[in-house]
Each structure stands twice: as C-alpha cells, then as structure tokens.
Amino acid sequence: MGVQIIPDFVYSLIPNTLVLFSVSACFILVHLMGTLFRRYKYVRRCNKIPGPPAQIPLFGSATEFVLPPEEIMPYAVQLYKKYSKKSAVVLSSNKIIDKGPEYDYIQPWLATGFLTSTETAMGRHVDAQQKSDSDYFKAVYKMTHIIQARQTRPWLQPDWLFRLFPLGSEQKRCLSILHGFTDQVIRERKNEHKLRKTEQQQPVDLPKKDDDEFVSKKSRLAFLDLLIQASQDGKMLSDLDIGEEVDTFMVEEKVNEELTRVFGNSNRPVTMNDLSELKYLECCIKEALRLYPSVPIISRQSLEDTIICRYDLPVGAAVIVSPYLIHCDPTYFPDPESFKPERFFPENIVGRHPYAYVPFSAGPRNCIGQKFAMMEEKIILASVLRRFHVKSLDKPRKTLPS
Ligand code: HEM
Image 1 (cartoon, protein in one colour):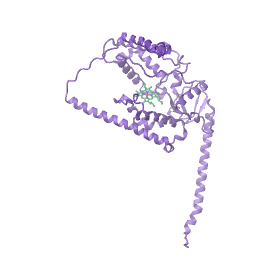
Image 2: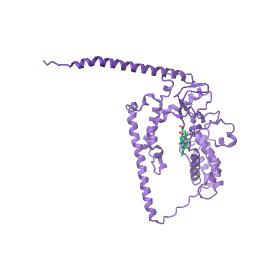
Image 3: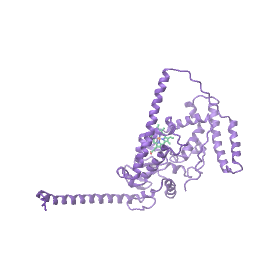
Image 4: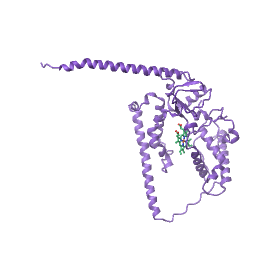
C-alpha cells in the first residue's frame, strides 16, 4: 500500500484559503444586501407614482409587461386609460433626456443594417408580401419579437445571460439572414453602378419611355360603380365596407384635386414651391402619422432625481412615452379611429395641447429629420398619386385595443 506524502506548506495554505473564502463571502453578502436595500428604496419611491401595484417585491411594475408581444399594446392602453389622469410633459424635460435601455436590444440589428435593408428602398425587391414565408420576412418578424421579449423580461436583458437562452441563438440565426441580405444588396448595387459607368462610357440610343398617363377623373369615378357591383347585394361588401371605401375615395379625390390644381396636366418634377402648395396632402400625411406613428413608443431615462406632476422620479427611472396612445386619446382627437385629415387644418389645431401630437417626438431629443421626412413623403406621394390610383390591401384598424 502506497503512502501519500502531503508537503507541509499545503497544510499551511488551508487556513489561509478558508479565511480568504470567508472574507469574500462576507464581502459579496454585504454588497448584495446593499444592492437589495438600494433597490427596495428605489421601488418604494417609484411605487408612489400611480400605476399597477408591484406583483413581485423589488421588481416594481416591470413584470406587468411579461406578456406575449401582441398583448403588450392592448394592455398598455388599459393602463393608460386607468392611470393617465394628468398630462406630464416628459419630452421637453432636460433631465429625462437619455435614451432608455430598451433601445439597446435593437442595436445588434438596426445599428448594422436595418435602415439599409428594408425592402425596395435599396432598389432590390424582397418580394416579402407575395412570399410571406421567405426567410427574410420571417427573420424580420422574429427579430421584432425577440426585441420586445428582451424589453419586457429582465432575465433576458444582460447580454451574457441572453446568449444562454434559446432566443439568444435564434437572434444569431436571424441576424445572419438579415445582414446576409444587406450585404447581398450592397454587392448587387455596386455591380449595377459599375455596369452603368461602363454603359455611360459607351453611349447608346435607348428607346424613349412612354409618358405615364394620368388616371382620368372619369375612370376614377367608375371605381365607385365597380364597388357597388362588387358588393353583390351585401354578399361581398357590406354597406359599411362601401362607406369606408367611399371615405377613402373622398380623401383621395381631394388629394387629386389639389395635385391637379398644382400640377395641371404637366409631368414636370415637383419643386420646392409646389411643396408649400400641397397643404391637403400634408394634412393626410400628418393624419396617417397620427394613426400609425412610425415610432409608437419612446423610452427615456432620468439623469437625476426629478419631480414630474408632483411625483418623485428617482435617477435612472425609465419613462415610456407612447405617441400611439396619446394620438388615440379622444380628449385631443375626437373619434380617434377615423382618418380625418381636416384635424390638421390651421383652424382646427388652435388650442390643442402642444404635446398631443408627437410622431417626431418633441423637446431636446426630437427627430432632426422631420422637415426632410415631410418633404420626402410629399414628393414621393405627389409623384406616385399623379400617375396612379392607389388602393391599400390592408384593412384600416377597426377598433382601438380596449
Ligand atoms: C416619417 C419619418 C420619420 C419619423 C416618424 C421619425 C420619428 C422620430 C422619432 C419619434 C424620434 C425620437 C425617437 C426617440 O427619442 O426614441 C426620431 C429621432 C431621430 N430621427 Fe427621425 N423620424 C423620421 C425620419 C427621419 C429622417 C428622414 C431622419 C434623417 C434624415 C431622421 C433622423 C433622426 C435622428 C438623427 C434622430 C435621433 C435624435 C436624437 O436622439 O437626438 N428621422 N425620429
């Protein structure tokens, strides 16, 4: 039987290791207690702000939003109706100016390619609407789902922890599809540019493109007869459906009248002067941004302790402002679900709360591109509507989530 000899210095190390271990454990414990106590004080301060009571101590109301993505907005509407008794101006504050952490989860996708990879904006057609099952289309939806999940579930928020969950590997897979597509688009566009350069060096007589014909008023009116025919005595389209189509048509008609007044029958490009004339079109764009704000939720984080509406908001608190909810508030926009460009006529905006309409946010962190965006939309819409009669295949939103 062999005898194992343990050197003396190993014995001398054991008490030292024990001491080190105990000191570390104490240190961690004290640190943990301190963090929990700070968190307790923080949640206690936040709980004085009207809102749903915390379900799990120390989590505050964060767990309220651990819901399937499609249920988040309807629930937010309920909370808004219940608790939004006072209007507080958060967006103009210089203390609540930092972007909230909710944006971090969009970063891996948006920062590296989302803006350049949407559909036909880059001149390449994804065919997503026809091929709704395309990998790209699925990846877009999956990514929005993952972002929402991370925004509402604290355990998915630290990057290292998120990577351990199946959603972490799912995100990796989606990003490789989305970025792969972007890279391909850029490659193709570069090749096209190269080709065009070569063509320019060897000029050829291209056949002249036919001028686009305006859709005549007569044929636009025939559209109504078509609707009535299509209704087949209410079997295909109800009176309500026809009514909606007629409302849409009336708006279109007004836009078309304005376009005809400004451009006549000319096919000339849109000028800066024209843009200031297209007042009704501008109201239509504003109304569309009211009902369907591109940024439905804005998140901010307070830089220091702040008082809002007499409530104490501790430093670091996340504040969510929802243009989507504000825009649907009947206090500011009666009959909020209806598309009524007239709401934005100068006489109708008199007296409206200056923060009741915030599709471009407001205050010190508002959208720096809003004038450009409005001009761009006007030019594109004017150019398309002068030549085509457009009909959405999507039904307008029927009812607000209750
Ligand atoms: C209809 C089109 C657009 C809408 C609805 C829109 C809306 C918004 C909103 C709501 C914000 C604030 C987001 C937040 O604080 O979380 C924002 C920020 C911003 N937008 Fe836009 N935007 C549009 C087009 C543009 C364009 C065309 C540009 C650039 C040319 C642009 C540049 C920016 C920038 C740089 C910010 C960040 C400002 C900051 O954080 O200080 N936007 N936009």
